[in-house]
Length: 443
Image 1: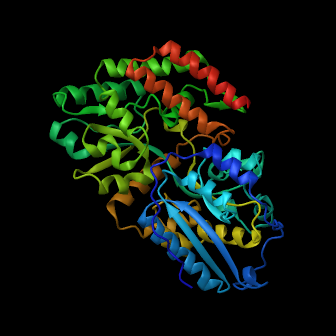
Image 2: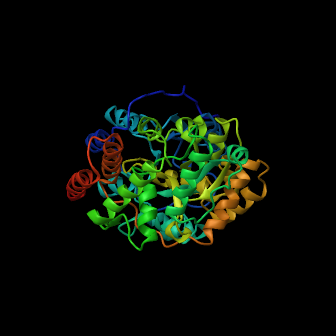
Image 3: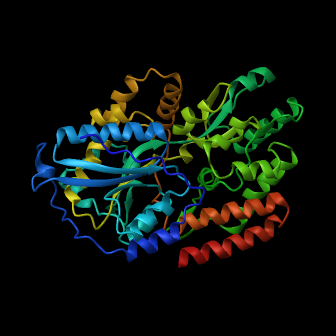
């Protein structure tokens, strides 16, 4: 049966994640399914009668088309199982999920990112998939070990990576060719990368800045910390000192003084992460920081040819990272079917070839090989090539971020913004951030 496709929901609201958790926890609990696992066979998930699963994710039209096609394939294998889908852009996604919860319409299966994974798990929002992983119904042995680990909280599996991605530098290849300047390379030390960016600004006569200002980007700071033997978190606490944070902010103050980055107003406009607003797309910088799986969308918004390099700093500072996860709701009445659908979407070649690389590279290595071998799009091939290079060099994955991570990264962005605008000095912003972040994590 074809998957019903609702109109694209559009919302300018920021994700209201605090309200989401309140709504989910206050919603009437459905009868929880057991962790008995499904028996083999196409009819097994619907053996007790027709099943309709609600599914919710964020993304654009291309992701929706691919996901709905994959769900139709599942229904073709399991005729008693159908799907009711809802999808929209990331802005407002968690707000919409809260609205669904308030109305008693909690999705059986939904997308979640690592900013909320630990919080959902520890508050009992997500379905515990550990039993399925243990009995082989969710066979995660084909995932890179670090990628599988990054979906576990307190030793239990609460979600399965929907795809793998890497933080990258996206640069304007055509622009650099016109300026007769070299492209950034994977593993360049941070200081050398910022010197390169300042040179781009000078050679362009100030028409284009070298790089996006990443002072408020927790992803960039996390890799910078790991390159020095540190980490962003240690358990439920910050893993860095005020001295380290001040060093990070002062690194970017020097970059601004060297004109390696654009004006604060431009940075603030692009800081929300919307691919269409990335400064490498709008023509304000030669390079921006993004996720590797976003390259096709970024390229669609640029007339110039874009290319990829790994983040500054040693590749060993990176780890196998999920772009997003599939998770089930703890109160679903169809836990076995939810687990089976997750297995189908993430671990089968048929689904992998249908979903392609829109969310990132397939999490399962055997599925990934089949998908990558069939790629004919040059942009997607660049993503796969860089991923292969980095996969051979990445370090050990840390635990998923703890409860409160979403607020912590917001506080970091606010602190960086206050420094860029001149509203506060680096030392004052550092002290304020450390106090507020520790309070959030202790809550």
